[in-house]
Image 1: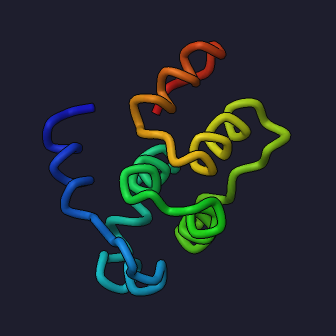
Image 2: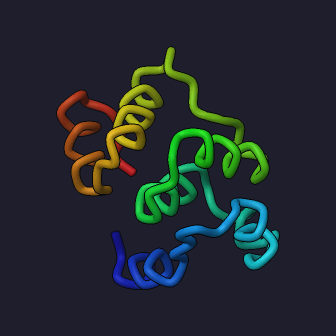
Length: 100
């Protein structure tokens, strides 16, 4: 991940903030101009739970994670177990899936 991406994610701490508040505070352009992987990174860094992550993706018009898809199942497992972004990327790499 680029340093600018890390700073961007660090600035998005939304602990205790409702997902709708987060979306109000962040312009629609930011949310819509970022891909699903970037939004998942934000969810991981901010330790959102699976329901909050799904809601973020749906509201952002990115669909949602489906456990029937191997990569999505790995991501859901990582979110459920509060894994770090590094741990998630290791799990994805170990399963020959694209990293975030």
